[in-house]
Length: 577
Image (tube, rainbow, N blue to C red; front, side):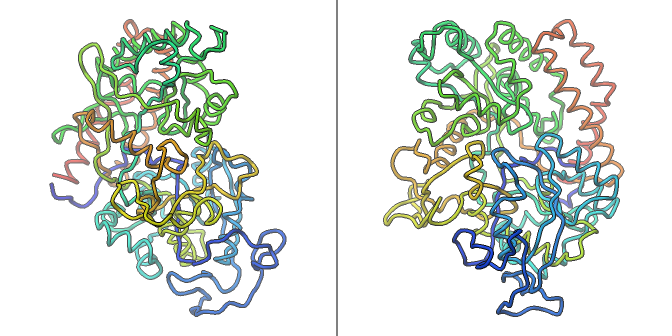
């Protein structure tokens, strides 16, 4: 199928707050003191003599640092991340200031509600120079770029100032095409691992404690009936072996984070269901809706039964990722099963004994024999994680900053840490996760965001843009549950799900003209809010999935769900047919 000019709205949400960066500076050490680095005591850049060539605007050549000869300041909107106490004091921004000569004025929003705060700023006109994080869908790029001219076109800026991003385009030419809106402009740089799909190819994973299974004399469940039986055993048979038969939580999860809701994995035992793509399904070129199928209703009835019998943690329907992590890292193991995109969202992977106790389940087979899981089969570019607004006085410097986050050095710095502290050169004769490629790096330690405490603030804050394939440079040696092998472990966990990929195509991104894009974006938000709220009511018993189903479908009709599906079909056809 030949890709036409992109004409539609983003359907799959960008994974927020799991990000990476890059750059060409050769320094790989930690943060220098203010006196050594050219930073004042307050962390801002001081005037300093630099070697190198600068243009008439005082900016360096593409790929060279510092970006600016004289200190400049940019305002920046960021969302707070789990495990980072004060993002404005994070050492990564101090390093960026040291190496680029750019000072940052922060607008920080809590993780929950960050999108709403940004929307208010954009509506008020009081928005910053640059915005980073997964806040912009394709529809937003059309709205704020083509429509309102808040986001500036990046085409010429990229061509004249970027090195790393253009290398990524050379590696995968479709990336540039998919970043281009219908008016021919690029308004933002997306979040994308250009090296492959990795463990994010399957969002909906559930992790179960193998030691608890052994304690209750059962094996990993293969069907929904067996899953219920295991949860009942966890609840009733003192699965953690501490002598208290009433302290076990059979199954938990979280909301407002990556793939940790308890219901998507379970509903997929009854029918195809993927909330991340706007409650849509693509099969043989036809887009259909998934929010109101009979299979989804049967899945909700099953889940409601689990909840009514105390097999699902009530907190799973309200808690955030940090609270899920607090549950999984308690001194005593009290939760046997958790839904989350990767196990490090739940337990500390440096607690090897506990981390190794959990393994991801295969997709469950439902009572009608359906067994599948939504699977991404090719990289998809959608939305943007870095945009420059019309307020920015230094757009050339801003795009050079973004280009750092599209190369290898800053990808490693923000996702892995500092050379000599969190990673180093590989041991001689070692290989990467594919078993054949010689390794060039090794992990000295590996932690996930929720394990990052205040004293670790020098290590982890992440921004992923279009990054190179740096992950397959690290050696894999010894026990796969060793934190140093975490990425390889997750990929292995994902690969075993591949035979169960749902019989549906992954919906690619597409754009619409401004008016329709705004209409679909508004419809999608209303539908998403309604479906989530309704599902919670069905699961908790506030509504009956049988008696109240027709009323629920009527609510979808009022929100023009069928029109929403039709508009997406129209956009898909104009893009790909």
